[in-house]
Image (tube, rainbow, N blue to C red; front, side):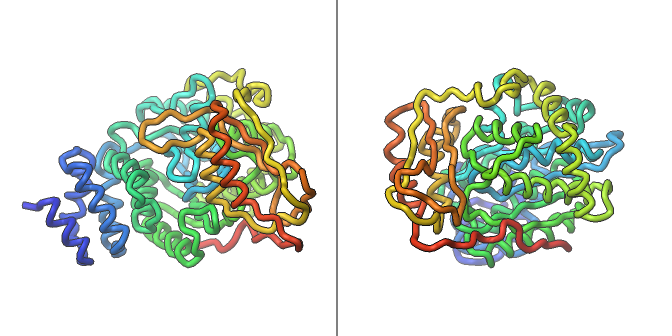
Length: 439
């Protein structure tokens, strides 16, 4: 017999758990036979003591097979996905999924909700009236058969162990663990039955893992875990030292993505456009539709410019119940009850950004949640008006804030005063795309 208290104590004391003990934890989470308090204690012990690579592999496998898995027999296409480790304004999913699908690969994307200071892909999609994220696997397969891509949440029976542990991590301060992040991400992605996986591993002030060494360790861990399972995996290290693009929130991130899919260009969205093309290029390459990632990027840009990506995104939204009228004029659909400009107190240069604080400002405006199950405000968030290195004048608008409750402005404004640092000298922003890690 295995007892939860013994497993907690063993990990608390720094010992390595057996494969059977790891499965016991995953099954206990999935079947809810281990109380939340004990799961929370085990998560904290794992956060503090860490997990061996064998424990991570065992936990990933146990979570992956804790419920049903996505089968793609008869699809006739390679299945490829992308996952980001989380950031502020990170909306690449809405671009890369349709662009890769337009190039001929299938994209079964299983996504999550807001976690800590970062936004949630599902929360953003649900700001489209009628869009359904909770599809059965059969329904998701039908959407993929129609347009080549689907973005859904975990079903009740798909990786149920992670669904429970993911929620607990957000509520117990155990998010920032490379071992737990790896097992959470990879269990969901591998349960999707992927042939290829591209990982966008964030580092910098807005990432969960701010230390580049920790971020690189996570990237290596996930690539190794994916390759062990038979899924071709690549990780791209990217900077999260300022918000990606210009919109951070829920609906406004859909708005910015649709603008780019229309072929529109905006100076403050160029980083989002470039990163999306690079990620989509790798997806197309791993899916066997391009000989190199560079060739894949060129294909992705063609699909962006000829409107194929927008067509597939609209088809996916419609197939999942979304009202396309919102996408026709996204700027007019944005109707928050309250808006406020955040202005510079002095002249100078945008010298540095505590990007995590920007994420918390977005969350406190109502775009994120503090407790599991809380609703989020579709139109809450902010539009950043500057990028690192820009010249700033006193009284210049640095950001536009949106919320449904006027009382919410005070704390986000205080956070932004700390986050957006105006200095006396121009700075060179960090490179957006860094090292690429493969097996």
